[in-house]
Structures are given as C-alpha cells and as structure tokens.
Image (cartoon, rainbow, N blue to C red; front, side):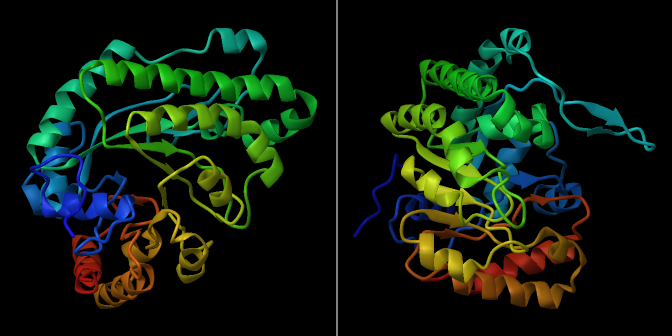
Length: 342
C-alpha cells in the first residue's frame, strides 16, 4: 500500500520519517538529529561548516540521511541570566524573580523576521526533497529556565496565578508566531516544542502540577497545529513516565529523547510505542567516548529494540556536539543503518 505523503518529490529518507511519524510503516527506520554542532562531521559530508548557514544545514540533512530540516524557530522567556566563563564563553547561570510588571514587559522576537525566515527556508527545504519543521520554546521550559527551578517550585505554592499567567503568555505568543508562519504562505510539516521538564528520576514537578500548569495553554497551541495539518512533537531529557501520558492526552504524534541514562527503550516502546513515535535513545557521552566498534554494535542493538511495529526514529538523546569524533559518528550511522530495514 503506497504511503500517504504530504506532497510529491520527497526523498526516501523524508518519506520514511513521515511514515514513522504518522503511524505508517516505513521501508527503513529513519535517522534524525534535532541538535547538531560538529564541524568535523559536517565537513565530512558536505565539505564545510553549517553553523550560521541555513542552506548548508539543509544540504547536510540531505547528505547525512536525515528527513527534515529547520525552517525557523522562536521562543519567549524572561529572567534568564548568563555569565561569562574563564574561557570567554557565555553560559546560562540561572533564573530570576519575575513580577506581573515583568510579564507585561516580556520581550518578543521579531515576528516579521520569523515569517521571512520561514518563507525563504521552507521553499529551499522543499526543493531539497525534505520535510519542513519549526521549533518553538514550550511554556514550561521557558519558565523553568527564566525563573529558575527552585523559584518555580516555590511559586507553585506562593504565586500560582502568576506562574500560570507566565505559561499562558508564552503559549499565546507561540500561537501568534505560528499564525504569522501560516500567513507567510506555507504550512510546515512538523512542529517541535523544546519542552525540557524532567530530571533523570522524575518530572521536575509533580505530574499533577505539571498537567495543571501546562495543559490548557499547550493544548490550545497543539489544537491550532493539528487543525493546520501539522505533526506535533515534543523534546525532553530525563525520565518520561509521568510526562508522555500528558503529551498523549494533548494529541502529540512524537517524542524526542528517551534519554538512555533515565529510561529503558524496550520498556518505553512497550508502553507508549503504539500511540506515539519515539526518537532516541543513543547516549551522547557514549557517542563521544566509546570505541567505534562498540558504538556500531550499540546503535544496531538500539534500532533492533525500537523498530518493531514502526513508530521509531534512530537519534541521539540530545546534541551531537563537537566533542564527538568523526569515526564514532560514522560508526553510529553504520550500526543504525545495518538494522534499519523492515
């Protein structure tokens, strides 16, 4: 039976990714990374770096075997602090107290820039035969990093109305940005929330609190996405037992991460794999430090665990960073591809 695809001209790797995300059976388990920052790997595949070069990123996605590329991204947040390290680089250094007045002054990205970026990049991505995705900051991740986790947990009890309003305003902005994207003349295939909300042992707050804070505003954003025919995904690190049920209730099609240090892929697949597409779960530390022969073996085993019944995409838990040796990543790709055929 032929695949039900969003358009013609998609590369086989994009067809497989779309099939996996929509519950159809792909020919092969697709591979897809959401976070990538490794010049050596980029040079191997396309002969140049991709940082700051969206067209190069699209070319890399095609040549490396991924099925989608990023057209635009956005996010709103207040309170986050950065500090400069001894090597001169700037790093996140915690959140800050937030008031009602601060909410009224919440800075917003340039929506005209978002629309322009999407229109230009989406056209180029489609010309490459890839799926188009957008990336947005989820309200919980925005609050957890803008306010800081300790302060957020205190606000659950001391200032619940202010905390809920923070979440509501973030998702209200996400919907306004999405409308600008839709008005730009094209519909993305996939929308991904950057939605970190879990530690390695549990959700960052109680499951009931998490649902109470995020469900209503996020469900409204998800409904808008689904009404437009856009596949909805979320990313989080950490333990997912209490998180995925809430996401499924909102109608999400996919979840990225299934962090290996916090979850057993076979267990997660058995409990959630028929209802949502799982991305993961190769450990980035293992990818950076293990021997290539062992990485190849582990990647092959990972795909064999995740692939039964479809709805699985091979991926690294988080970022393929610049500490990953080229030979290690190539070993990972080889191992995943060896087990990919259905």
